[in-house]
Length: 58
Image (cartoon, rainbow, N blue to C red; front, side, top):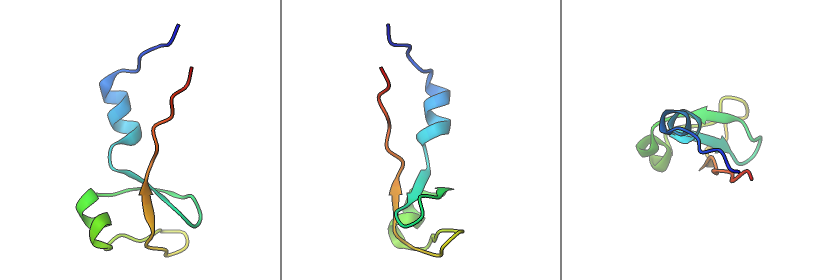
């Protein structure tokens, strides 16, 4: 049986969370700023960020 996660939990884990494509650091930022290229990684300074993928665990 698959447990369904509650909406606040999903929002906290995946909403506004981005991952650096160079060093895999997690960064919480606004989508508009990330798309405009104004947000960089705190660890390595890279501007390439992707949204955290939602995993399906069974």
